[in-house]
Amino acid sequence: MNIQAIIIIVLFIAAVFYVGRLLYKNLFSKKSCGSNCKCGVNFSNIDTSKQLK
Image (cartoon, rainbow, N blue to C red):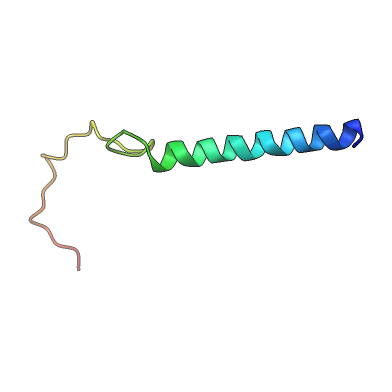
């Protein structure tokens, strides 16, 4: 094998590892909500008596 093939294989393995790690962190996160969640928002002042038609 030449050096170019070895570099391509190493880069491919690194990319697969990186994407796999991102998926693992996203699927098995210990947080109770996602990254875009507004968990600190207080919804107690919202009037729920009105219904959408």
